Image (cartoon, rainbow, N blue to C red; front, side, top):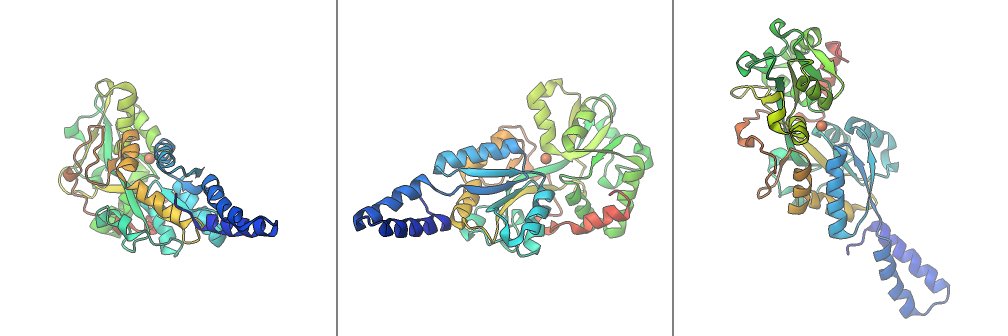
Length: 346
Ligand SMILES: [Fe+2]
């Protein structure tokens, strides 16, 4: 079993205490190994990813290594703020963010350590931070989920830029989190900042805001609204619950290489201040292992990031997405929040 920094300190202390207590050298040397095994320091994971996904991952990790994981769960942007506030006192070893911008905001502040190069090599560059401070662990695609009884694919907008045009007033639902900032950044990259601001203003004027992608997807399914911007896996989650054939809703992607066809990643990194760095690196490597990827891919309809692991969900091939902007280009998406404020959305 690998030992970590805290275990090494504990071993030193224990040995010293035993010697002071007058025990023989043989006993003093023999005891710490057993203690270290019994007391492997749990990994402290700040988790913003969907809990079911993380629980499946953590269970597989603990089964494979015997190392326990203590989770603190909250929304990813909140956890990133908490880590920034805690600074060097943060107990977090690893941050698992549902989206890349919150973890990128930590990288921009120099709060993350380097991911082991051997781990970084397991995934394509576009799924990892350019500075090697975080890894994408699964891919999700942005989609429109629409109600088949209320609108046909032919009637749906041909571009993300038109989703909130007056023709769709009252028909479009949106959620200001979980993929939304990446969407705004993609529009900034491809169409420019003024176009993104205008897009947000029309969304505010003609769209209906929902407080979560699951809520928006359910509203579409129930016929409360014709279509909504969302992430792909929410529809698959409904399909798993009710059977795809029984659903009133379906997924739609824009034709061509539209700015609406983006993917984003869930991402993880190690805190520079972690006192459990060997275990943290081991956990990150496990996230990109066959076992780790299978545990996550079986739980949610996100795409695995390593080759050789396939999703049990019948996902549209990722190659169908031209994805003009990659997660590595998104950064902390701070400009998306500025634009949302300028448009009066937040
Ligand atoms: Fe989500």
